[in-house]
Amino acid sequence: MARTRYAPDRGLTARMTLTIFLLGLVFVGFVAALVGILTAAHASSAAIVFFPVVLGLGLGIGSFYWSDKIALRTAGAREVTPQQAPELHGIVDRICALADMPKPRVAISPTNLPNAFATGRNSKMAVLCVTEGLLGALDRDELEGVLAHEMSHVAHKDVAVMTIASFLGIIAALLVRFSFYGELFGGGDRRGGNNNNGGALPILLIIMLVSIVVYAISFLLIRLLSRYRELAADRSGALLTGQPSKLASALQKVSGDIARIPTKDLRESGAEALNAFYFVPALTGGKSLSTLFSTHPSLERRLAELAKISKQLGQ
Amino acid sequence: MGFLDTLLGRTKPVQPNLDALFALPSAAITLEAATGLVPTGAGSVCFRATEGRAFAEIEKDVRDLLAMGAAADAPPIELSTDSYGFTWLLVRRPADQLDALVTDVHAVNSSLADTGFGPQLLCSLVGFAGPAGRLAIVYLYKRGTFYPFAPKGGETRDNALELQVRGAIGDDLKFEPDLSRWFPVWGAPGL
Image (cartoon, rainbow over the protein chains, first blue to last red):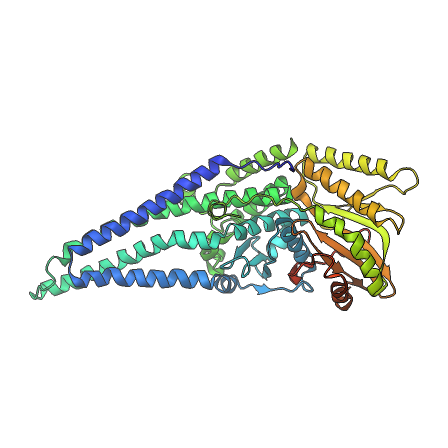
């Protein structure tokens, strides 16, 4: 039996398991609270819960199903053939052969911002997109590292996992909005002296408060999960090519460039909407609190983890 | 990869399949009968070197091992790095010793696999030449499958010859069914 050099990162696995477990717990608690509130409620407030759930489900499924088309259009990217970009395709071919994965479509986005993302609802429908800025900024080995990181996102089915994880947050956010409007509407009704929705007003208020709490907790958990999945993709990508230091140097180059570019241009180019799928996030705010809300781990953290892998490989 | 591995984002590097390579010599006889393509005696192994001292040492051991096996009468093993950063080890044998060539290639594979660097193996190829042109039978370690690669002038492929070869020896070798994985290896040593 061949020896393996693969050492699993148990700490990362444990933290990710805990995060997923907590998200599930919040979800179950949220559903239980809604059912509990609604059994004591009027029919009109049931509709206020029903619509956000249907709408959230539709949004979630839609954005998952068309994730490749939506992301490509947002980034203004076009698909390239092996004839148009032979080197890029060559690198992707080799990564796929090393990882035993089907080859994704390859696209280039005409942005100067150096970045890359992978999307698509499964590995057969996956699209790998790099920006022109990235192709210009990185050398071949660094580009290979970034592409291996993105292919690891595809292998980990991160689009599916993050869509399902975000679903809770979407519904909670929609519920906050709907119950807020419901309350305004109910308030007008009561002032008219025609108070026929009985106890619905406090119930809407309770739904709104529960939703706000659920939204806040799930938001933090989803961001935490996103950061762990970035670390997992860094790790798998680095082990795939066997060049963790190249990925580290790519990260360093790209993060420096991103932080230097003014925020206004980024908002206009629509890069912010794609942050969760990007290689590095396009906006960098303050230091301490932003790490809690960020979709990506800090540069220092990612470099430290890659240095660990480099050390393991050298032994 | 299991459901839990996906959920927790812990893909393991894929181990190579080394044994299917030994089916090549008998397939080469069928290939010659059907298309007139004969082995050139050149074969190569392609792998992605990892950073660090451990891999560099093993790479050196592999070269020593092959140099010993090839003895004094054979030309030395040639080492090169291609434009994608992959390392190629080129082994040359007399054209009629395809068995020995495959054994050499296998020796490289098992040294890498035994030391834990099996996942770094990309592909192996054995060169053929004939009236129809040049051709390589490429072996994909992670799939355990073969595919033909026939370069024509410039960066174009002779797809007709490739499909003809698949028709001729498709029953002898396990061919890669997914055509999108028949990636080109332009200018590969041993072609």
